[in-house]
Image (tube, rainbow, N blue to C red; front, side, top):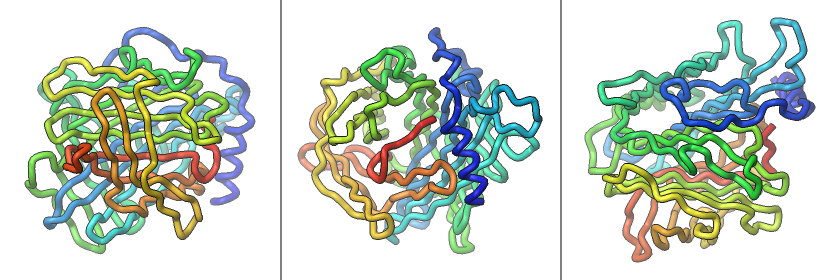
Length: 363
């Protein structure tokens, strides 16, 4: 497994410069829910929190697709032209623990597939599949991930329209206009289903308003990060009032911001308020050091945006994911609470922090 991973990542690292540019133009659905194999990198990222057995749980499932330029001219059917990676995780808030697992395979041969006409991503026995439902543009995502030590069998259903980040979905990620991604979010998804843990089926149960909610991000890009960026800090928060808050900062090696952005959409708003880079600031307030990797992460932040000054606080400090067997990265990603400046919980969602163990490489 280790040899195969090194070989696959070696193909990524030695790929030729991208011959494709990120195409501009209006997004079209359901086609743009599907895979974009001409883009260098793409991911479908679904995170959420549920109540089961009277306890709060966080979950995430992410599928990554990467184009391998080194295999573009090879004629063999076995050439690894596209790779799929997947991560799944479960946060046991009461038990203060994180369980996670990962997968990797090249596409084809019935092992891995990412359809182009709609979201239908499969990797071995894991899958994320979208079905259209009654409302125009609405979705129902089925998650099936029998992972090591746990399993996710969940369904996440639209309660709001799509949220197109940036300029109609074209989201800048650096000083150059080409440093961008297509970025589509679906906040406030309603979650039902089952979590399996320790031989037990934990069914998602009716809970307090704002519980059993998920957030879906779909991004694809050719040049997501500027060369001087080492990683990012990002939040996607379902607000208790039905709104949605996104904020991110791309960091230089010295920790200073290279670029920033985000958006706020109210529960009754048709379009988001898009934040300019100078309007977003992340200030670390508390750190935690991983006993496994030795990496030090900020697990509490003060965040300033046009939506106001707020705090993001990890519900469990130890939500570090070691994905060196697939993507090669160690990063932090976990369920977190959004607090008002007065300390009142006003939202729940996920905080993601990359580039703390080593500069992030997106090939």
